[in-house]
Amino acid sequence: MQPVLPFQDPGLQLLVLSSSRAMTEQLKANWMEEGPPPLFFEISGAAQLRSQLREQHWDAVLHCLNHASCSPATTLKTLADRNLDTPMIIIAEPGDQKAAIKALHAGAHDVVFIDRLTGLAPSVAREIREAAQRADHRAALDMLHDSEARFRALASNLPGLVFNLQRNTAGHYRFLYVSEGSIRLLGVTQHELRGSARRFFDALHPHDCRLLTEALEGSAHSGNALIWEGRLQEGERWIDMRSLPHRNDEGTVLWTGIATDISVAKSTEAALRESRAQLAALSFHLEAAKEEERERIARDIHDELGSILVRLKIEAALLASKLPANLSSKARSIENLLDQAMGTASRVARQLRPGILKEFGLAAAIECQADDFAHSTSITCRAQCDEGIELDADTSLALFRIVQETLTNVAKHAHASLVVVRLRHEHGNIALEIRDNGRGITERDMDKPKSFGLRGIRERVQSLNGAFHIASAEQGGTLLVLKVPVGRSDETVPVDYEEVVQQDLF
Image (cartoon, rainbow, N blue to C red; front, top):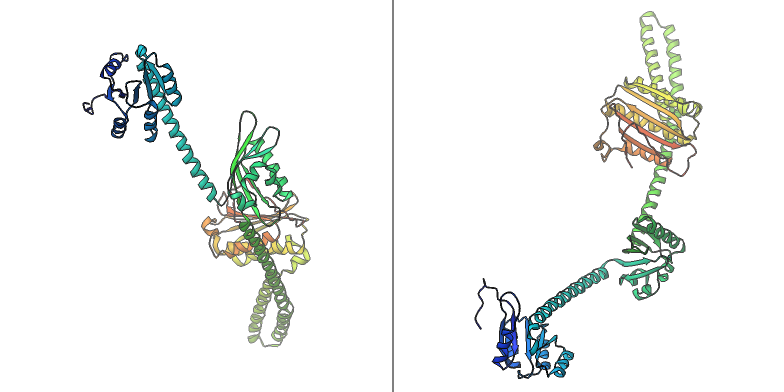
C-alpha cells in the first residue's frame, strides 16, 4: 500500500476480506463513482483484519463470501470487540442468497451480489453516510447524558427543590421533575411528588396553599414570574418559590424553578421587626420622659424664676424711686436688665414647653415659634396655618418639635434669609411644609452618620404613621414635606408631590 501524501485526496479506504486477487480486481473494475477511486486493501483472514483495524481507520469492510478465510460472524465480532461501527457489506455470489440473508440477520449492513457490482459504490456511500449519522446520534446522546448528569448533580447540591410543575388545560397540576431536595425541604420523596402533586400542596399551610394556588393561576394567565412565600403545615418553616411560566400551543403551562427554605431568613426578619418595635417603644418612652422633664423645667422657670424676677423688678423700681438722682440711673439700668432676663426666661420656657400649644393649639404655637426664630436669628420666617386644625396632644407636640428641629437646622446650616412654614389640611391628613432659600441639601448631607436631627424627625414621623420627604427645591434651598393622618391610623400616608423630585430618607 502506497503512503498518501498530506496534499493528496486519499478517497475512500476500503478493506477487502478476500483471498482471491481476481475478486478484488473485479470490485475495482466495477466501481462506478465520480471522484478519486477508493483504495481497495486486500486481506484474507481475521488476524490481518485485527492488525489493520489497529493501524488505521477504514471507511468500510467488504466481506467476500466463499473467498475469505473467516465467516461474516467472525468479522462482525472483530469489529464489535474494537467498538467500531464500520459498515460491513457482504459481496456474494447469486447462489449464496441464504448465506447472505443470514449475514444480514447477524448484523451486516448490506449485500451486493457479484452480478450487480454496479450498485457497490452507492451501497458503500449510503452505509458510510448512515454510519456518520449513527456516530452523530451517539455523540448527541453522550452530550445529552453528560448534560443531564451535570444538571442532576447541580440540582442535588442546590439548597432547595428544583422542579418542573405542569398545569394542564383542565387546571390539574403534575410534577414532571423533582430534585432530591424534596426530602430535605418537605420530607417527601421525589417519586411521591411525581406520582401526585397533591402531596406538595397538602404539605403547605392551608391559608398559604390557597395563596399559592391563586399565584399560580395569576402567573398562568398573565405570563409573569411566580414569586411566592408560604409556610409548611407545621407553621414554623417557610419556603420560597420562584419560577417563570412557559405556555405551549395546547394551553398547558409549565413552571421551571426552585423552592428554597427561608425559615432562617423569616426568623431573622421577625426578630428584626421585634427589635425595631422595641427600639421604637424605647424611643417613644425617652421622648415622653424628655417632654416631661422639659415641662417640669419650663414650669420651674415660669413659676419660680419668673416670680423671683418679677419681685426683683418691683423692688428695683421702689428702690429707684427713693434713690437720689445720681443713683437713679443705675437702678433703671438694673430694671432694664431684669426686663431682658424676664424676656429670656419666658422665651426659654416657651421653647421647652410652649403653654400656647396646650391653650391655643398647634397653629398658634407654630406662629409664635416663627416669631421667636425671626427675632433670635434675624432670618425672616413666615408661618401660614389653616384654620380649624385640631389634633391630639401627642401629634401636636411631635409636629411642633419637628418645626423646632427644622428651624434649628436652617439656622445652623442653610445660610438662608427666608423660611416659610405651611400647615394645612389635605385629604383627611395634616401636611406640614418647611421651605428655605438657603444653599440646599445634598445626598451626602442626608447620609451623614451623625445627622441626628433628620433621624429624630424621621422617628417622630414614623411614630405618627406618617410619611416624610426632604429634597432640594427647584428654586434653590431645601423643602421638607411630611404628612400625618388626623386619626392616627395604622396605615402610612402616601406622599406624592409633583413640585420637586424628592428622596425618601427611609
